Image (cartoon, rainbow, N blue to C red):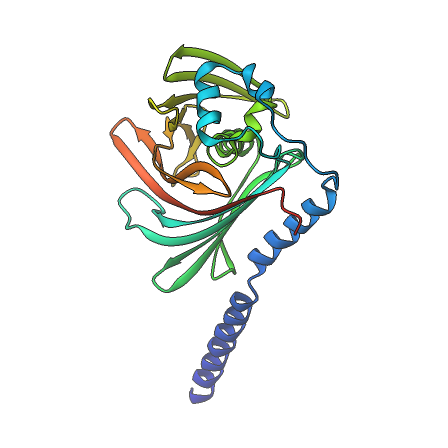
Length: 283
């Protein structure tokens, strides 16, 4: 009996050591970093042209005002960008907010979005990786970098990631709005509807601006919410923005939230503090 207990104890100890070792290896983060390196290798070495006033004059007036507020004229056209974020998020409705840090690298010309996040829950690290490219749209979340708790892919994920890809363009890299495949419809001086097409998938959103020309909200009905039972539903989704700051000479959003608007009430599931944005990265 004592021998059996010792063997079980030894197995448990070895399991803890193995799990701890895997967690320390940061495999999910390394996968993200390797994907970034692959994207950089494929980038053109040619220097980007500068955005001219003529580039934005073809756009609707509210979009022009926004780009002028940001100060894109004279800046480089964007091939790629990297964003570092931190904030709090909820894993589900009714749960407590958990702190997170995140890094995102988007290769605009290649149509690739890579998003890595670390969340701390009860002193355990939860790692998430969104991988959106020509062939795949996938979200995988692991506890301790070992136990997969979410692994979503397929056409519904592709639609959801296309909405997010467009939202990132509007919020993090508005320079990209000058050449993207977007159909605009002006509602009034402060509201514009947009239909964005990317790799055969078209998604819709409404962009709302304030009197200074700043984007203050992005609303879409095309992003799918993943429920506990694994079912994805179309729920109105918005990203209100309440603060701006200057990053590399541009006036860009600093603080925002992401909200699901359910029939029985709104669910703010993440807050976003933008720490830094860099364009046309080379490493």
